[in-house]
Length: 230
Length: 409
Image 1 (cartoon, each protein chain N blue to C red):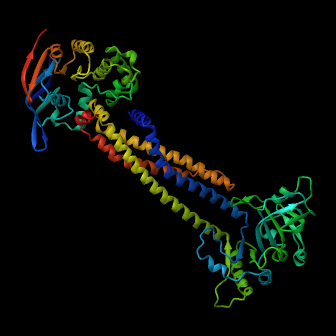
Image 2 (image 1 turned 30 degrees about the vertical axis):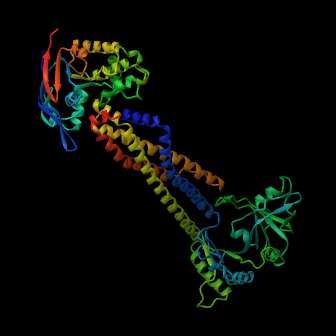
Image 3 (image 1 turned 180 degrees about the vertical axis):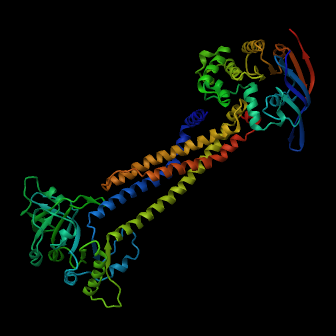
């Protein structure tokens, strides 16, 4: 395997809920190499989502050291974090999170707008990304006119558009039926084979089995970390 | 990038058409009132400038009442004055002998109907009682027939000079009005002449008039009414001197002692303009205050709607942030929306206001115009309102935490 993309040392995230201090993450040490395909598992409240928010630079740790592609993330301000999310991270959410008033093309283009790419290149790249998930013929439809599986494929196209270092998917099949889930997992498999680094969060064992590494969290700590080779 | 923001702003405004229109209306009302009033005032202002120049530059008037336009303060002070009588007018003229180019004595009754055979005018003709100097003092030339003569006045003959508009209404093209018998307020007059058409001033026709000898008017129509005296100075340079002499002569004619103040008013073009300006100022200030309050209210409305919009679109903001929107972009997006709202309001206010102002101008027969200065000011002010009241909601949107924003429904 190649270079390290994510290096986390002693990452903690504490919330104050009234008087009580909630330790959502409590000393996580993790590394992800370029080209890895991993799943993060764990019961509700184990800190999966918090971990993903920190990995995705949506949130910053209360303590610890987080290096993304050699950059020290925990020292960044809001706008630097936004730039990292824009260039380095591709999010896929359980609830899809497309903008309902925009058509698929515009949704996929959105990260490129914030990257300052001009209109013509934006459109070319967005169409290419939609082709990659097999939805080029639906690019002028709005998300409300598509099925759940199609919407998630648009979301994947959006995640891919800026060729991120890492794709973070939070329960990407959580709202989909089994057949559609398999389609989506197929796309992730292809993306991984094309050299992308992918981290899935899931609580479904069979989804986790599609990946090559499973990390189990419990109470904000890493319980197990098993790599498989296929 | 900016084009994108603009598109986004318009799209989200379009998505809430009714709400957008209602918010826009607030600004529109504020801008409308100032633009409508300013357009109308400017139209009237222009016609005052043209109207005054057609009155004769070196002319002034002596009257019982001052040239009040609307400010009716202390009207009673003037009503209690003695009327200026015809006798005083004649005495004044004698005293001013050789000191003025022209002295016209006159009295006017408005709302008269003039009839000839089967045709009649509307009851809106002004009947002047005057003498042979009226035409010259008021800048009228004779188009047909003759002017009034000293003899007409002396013998109080029932002759009349008619304005061109009266001629037009009573006589068909082929009929010669001179010598025709017309009926004015129950009396019969022979048309002696017709004035050359003068056109409109102050938005009013100056040709809808009949002039009859002053003694006859006083006897038949304006029993004991106060007359007014029009004086034309011999030259521009001697204007002020003539005014001084006229004031002195008038005091003598009225029999005032040294201690008594003038019990008559001097009306000059300047005093006319000044009293118009005073009236204009009052209306403009009123319109300004109303507009300002309306705009502040509209600004609060914009702020309110933008706060609602931020709350409703928290998730959208979260999505945008998750794909890498920096604070600045979110801030710009919401500011631009607020600006679009207020600018659209300003623009519609300008359009409606200009239209309404020009309708007023049309009613008064004044030329159409665009109040550029006020249009620019209004658009600027409404933009400033939009940005300043949009600032807080925009900062709130930009400052949202992406994790919390994404979690919101």
